Amino acid sequence: MLVLKSLHIAFVVSWFAGLFYLPRLFVNHAMVDDAATRERLALMEHKLYRFMTPLGILAVGLGLWLAWGYGFAGGWLHAKITLTLGLVAYHLYCGRLMRDFAVGRNRRSHVWFRVFNEVPVLVLFAVVFLAVMKPF
Image (cartoon, rainbow, N blue to C red; front, side, top):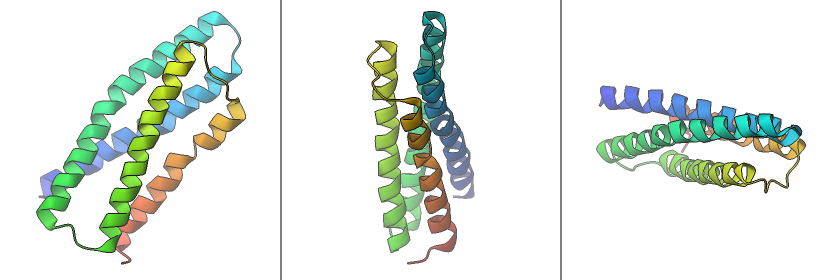
């Protein structure tokens, strides 16, 4: 189980790196006007999304495997799973935003993306505290 836990943590860290960086690319994408830069950012976003999606699947899959192995006991675990489902929704929404940028349909400002970029930070703090402290 320690190997699974180690892999879970490594994949979570890797997935979060993508969740932190992709919306940051959106901030830059929303600020540029020239076509070459927009095209380059769209390509970077697409490649990053394709890279981080399997990391997220592995992080969630290993987390569920651990929960199954240890038992789905404790309110903290249910809260962590709920936050993880929200993070999966965030990831999928990032995919939609990426596709909107690719076809020139973005209607949001760079300021909106700066705020949007903070969501995974808040989730990360909550999940870490839940997993370490197991408050309920």
